Length: 109
Image (cartoon, rainbow, N blue to C red; front, top):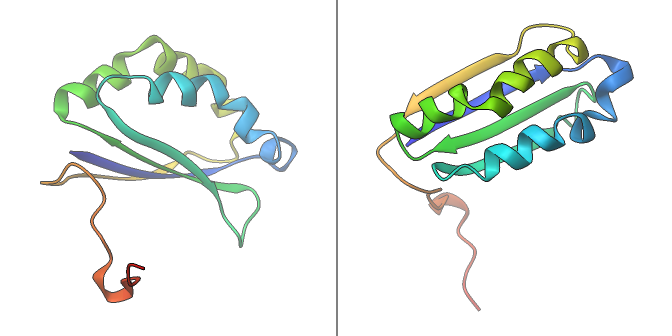
């Protein structure tokens, strides 16, 4: 899979509305056949920072994502709400889902 984590620094006046601003892009991305997940989180330390954790099945799914109409629309619609260029980590991993964190295993009841 292709595993991506991106940090978005959002302008203060857009920070509370970021989930609404990205709603169409998020929904369309999640509906792509090769999307494994596409999840936003807001930093607990910086209320203007959002982190996007996304994964795609393979190179073909990743390419389809960045060539999609909703991605092209996001390239136009999201930057005016950002205070700087997003930072990204993009890796290929030989797995298809999250692994369990064995060091913090919760006993099954």
